[in-house]
Length: 320
Image: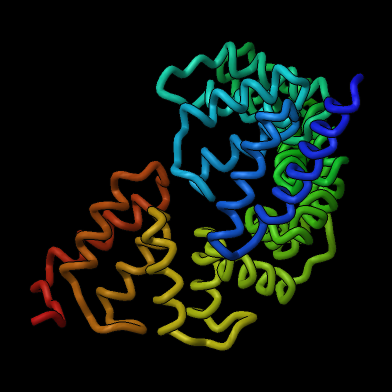
């Protein structure tokens, strides 16, 4: 290799390194400079810059958002041997305008074979759901185990669910609770809610309703709809949290905006009876009708009963 080529490689690596440093900046001008450095590094033949440049185009950070350029660069990264590129390409092939699940799975598999943690998790999801491939729970669980062992919270949560429900083997609540614990420690809201369920019922761990409430509250702060619903119920009843009907309604409203059927029903009850909020039977009726469209049969039955009760009273609204 000639001296000139060595200098080009050295400069490309410097640009890539500086670009990666600036990419995480909160300053818009720094992110724009990062994209400029990635582009220059690519021009000098640094294929490692293809992936971060693709991320810039996908997110619109530092450059004008361009998903076509992003996809092209992810493919370039993948073909140069970057496992992250294969995984990102898989996502484009799965969700893009020209979706091709067979090709998406092939891309995820290449990423997984190269040890990419998200490639493992995404391939596992496809095999678990049977999306674009023959359903294979055993292989999916094996892949989740591998990704979970690498520390990916989403995989830990998925593995825990497979263990607690007995996918491929007898249910193992203790192992499930352990994996939920690991994922919850990484602030995974879904894991927090699931671990709260375990703590509340003593499933795979010691029964601890206070900790369950703390976990639900933490998940609620992260915006998880189930965490918000559970926390709203705790505020409403005063169990493990101070009784606060107004806070309960706030939680139900936030979860209801995320289409949570039981939160919608509870909010309807609060509005119908003026609990923690001004009475508004018209809004309660509207919410109940939305609940009836959900697949939650228990919530549907409760909503139908509330609608029946409200039909015998004159609609009252606090709105003028």
